[in-house]
Length: 67
Image 1 (cartoon, rainbow, N blue to C red):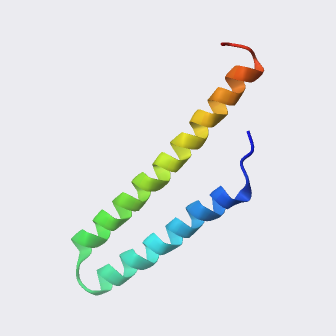
Image 2 (cartoon, rainbow, N blue to C red):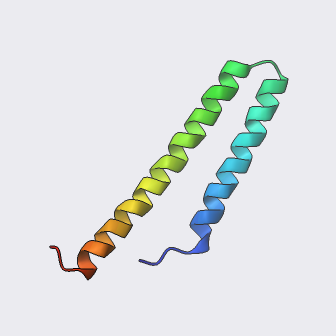
């Protein structure tokens, strides 16, 4: 499994952008929209992490020959 640092930076970048969008929307008085943006950002990052975990388990499976 060849996970490079780019994935970590992508997740951090998404977090920073979502935090900025949340702050701007909250300042504009659109708190409901700010919460939705945060929830959608969380789901996107969650899918990225689940994909990485899936690859990890596949790699472990091939290492220990549980095919």
